[in-house]
Image (cartoon, rainbow, N blue to C red; front, side, top):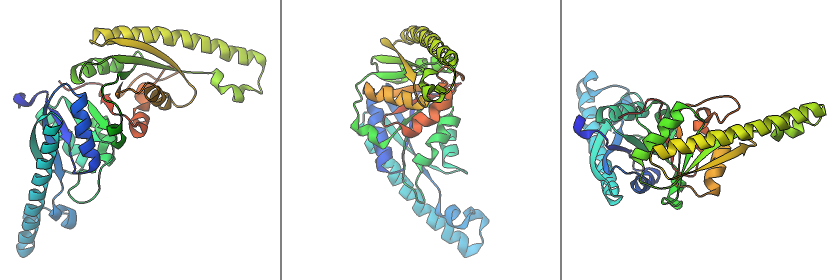
Length: 312
């Protein structure tokens, strides 16, 4: 299916959250071709835990009738998603897909088959038979999708989409790859390159009972951490500029969880979206890969998570 290479896969479950995701994605993404994927379960499987062909006589007929009605509802939902996508600026087509095992697995398979350049999902979805349960599967998509995933929380519709991007950087190859993918996917705009470093001195209350030499060591480590972070930030800016961004560096000291520092930086600067790799370095540095879940779960802004090996 090489003709579908580069398309945006819009996961739509009929919820307000998934509608918001489509609207926001239309303002953020460079690529305007899209497939609106509505995942449906099939009442026979949901209620009877079996395929119609596996059932006897009249029960099979009833199950097939239920599934036909469910497919028609899925087609209507997908068509509604296409209407929203076209209003958002996408050249979109409908794709109702029957669920195979898990919703996120179905979306991952669809992304692979369509060679999607990015998958868009709402941060929260509706529950019930025939709904994609997008909120419950966004984390699984982030971890398993072959393509970058743009997770759009319901609150994203209230934020500016013409503001700078926040590019999270920890010096790792995944962080560099995330910058490159973001430059190809997202509409041109300025960027802030964020490097977060962990502070020993921030643990001062815990160090109050130890010797002054230990406290001085913590202060010296902070000086080293600050200097290393500034160097890493400069390296990140250089990488961002090579990727095509007009970038400015931002080195921040974390006094709590790294994901919280990322969100605080994005909020303070009213960023349009946050970009990070799905895996990164660990240790005293930013460890961005280990905090992608925290960023995705708590962000009020769109988050683009790029896998280690991003799809073409």
